[in-house]
Amino acid sequence: MGIPNWNHEAGLNHAGAYQVSGRPFAKGGIDASSAVKVEFPYVTRWVTIINNNGSTVCKVGFSEAGVGGTNYFTVHNKAAGGQACSVRLEVKVGEIWLSGPDDVDVVAGLTTIQTRHVKTDAGDSWKGEDGVG
Image 1 (cartoon, rainbow, N blue to C red):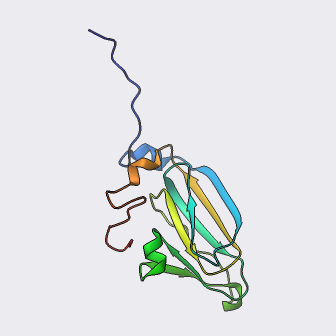
Image 2: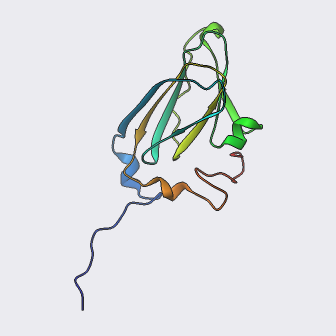
């Protein structure tokens, strides 16, 4: 009989991974004038998108098909007045897609969960699910 392996990997439903503070992630100055994917090294606990462009609205989706179709939300630009950033999105994703402005920042808190846990048969980060694309 072998020695038991007690090294277990956290999965998507591991509550403790979401109860602790997220590992910091920041990527700034993203040119999303063409649809662009932002990949995270681990599944996110939360994400915030900041649109620094003065005149272009940012489309944010969870797949390329989402930002190219109708499964996206928008982050207004500075010309619209007020803070040009999204609310803190409490989502478990391995990537997001951006389209529109040429100056976007993404800030996230990461879990220790591997991104392969958010892949479906249709692709990464919930692609193929309702509302994703």
